Structures are given as C-alpha cells and as structure tokens.
Image 1 (cartoon, rainbow, N blue to C red):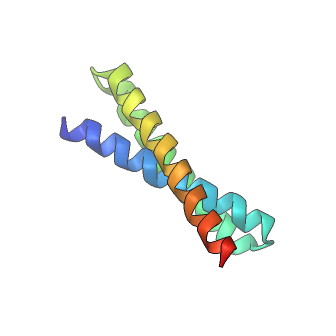
Image 2 (cartoon, one colour; image 1 turned 30 degrees about the horizontal axis):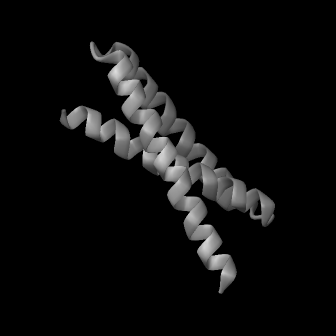
Length: 85
C-alpha cells in the first residue's frame, strides 16, 4: 500500500515539474527547463522500472497516472492564480 502511495506522490511531483518545464520553455528559461527535463527523465525511468517489475503492475501504473493527473491540475491552478496577480 505504501508503495502505491509512493507511485501516486511521484506521479504528482513529476507532472508538476513537467508543467513547470513547459512554462520555462514558454518564458525562455533554458536552464530551468533543462533542469526540470533532467529530473523528469530520472524520475520517470526509475518509476517505470519499479512499476514494471512490480507484481501489482496495473495498480501501480494507475496510481502513478492518477498522481500525474492531479499534479498537472494542481500546477495549472497555481500558474493561473499567479498570472492573475
């Protein structure tokens, strides 16, 4: 159960970072974008490997994907809130 929560949290963080990466590209910040891309690559491949070798493959994948969903929504709401100020 703890591992599934971990997949969710990592998916959440990873998609938040991916959203920040896209914003960094849009705002022409190459070093921030490169940093976010590097972190996302390391996180993504590490988690994918862990999920693939897990006996609860589908459940792990679903938890990871749901974390990504909520991470993107959270980051987009934060960006939208900051842009209104």
